[in-house]
Image (cartoon, rainbow, N blue to C red; front, side, top):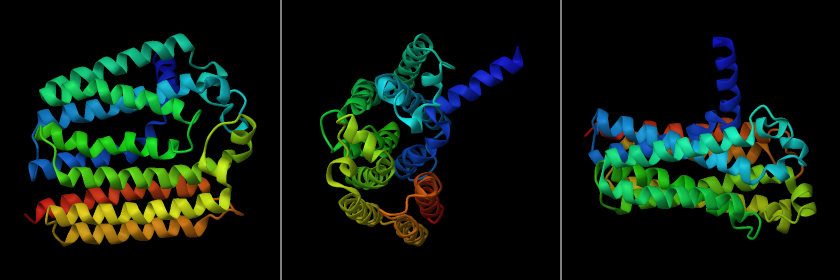
Amino acid sequence: MQGALFYKAVIWARMIKIEHSVFALPFAYMGVFWSASGWPGWVTFIFLTLAMVAVRSFAMTFNRIADLKFDRENKRTQNWPLVTGEITIRESYFFLGITAVVFVVSCAFLNALCFYLSFFALGWSALYSYTKRFTSLCHFFLGSVLGLAPLAGWIAYEPAFALAPFLIFLGVLFWVAGFDILYASQDVSFDKEKKLYSIPGKYGLETAFVLSGFCHVNASLFFVLSGVIVSAAWPFYLAWMALSGVLLVEHRIISPGNLQKINVSFFTLNGMVAVLLLLGVLGDIALR
């Protein structure tokens, strides 16, 4: 029995790609630590974490359901649990409902503004799954979904909007759009065949790589501006320089003619970006 439950848990972790939480969760923590100018308290920290894990699980599950017909035909995605039947559609909808409820309830425990905005966040997260059907700006739409993380972290402690988390939002938007454009380069032929919109599919790999680089330059600029706005200490700028270097390496190890290291670029290097910036924020907080 325990073995079966463990196996199912592993399958669900594959389904929602739990390891990709490293892309959004650190930015939520950045928002809450800067908003509180230190430790926000266990209640805020716990319910923010629950909310972030729940909404990310909701978004990934919704995406898997919405894209099921395409995932069945794409060789790259034919081993995904919903495609293989390891997880059923019925189970997916049940999980979708559970994660939505956990998210809304967690937001309610934070404050009224978080609760009211939780419904917008769910809708916005779900809408992304359909953007590739009608606009090549889908990469930027995905960036805006993950960009909600620092805003959510900020208002989780202080239910009011400010410039600093908005700058981080813009940084995350361009950062995610940049690496999602690169990731989509794997599916150029498939996207063209199925008439799906993506920048690599519509404009070609050369243009896509240029636009991705432009996005990452913008991301780096917005990240450093957020530090300037909060008068961050030197550890933040050290972390910013390191992450800027990581983004540069990302564009050096892959090219339109060589996508062999795309997974290293997508997960390993981009996972370092969020963690580095969070460490920079923690270093800044420690010196205040």
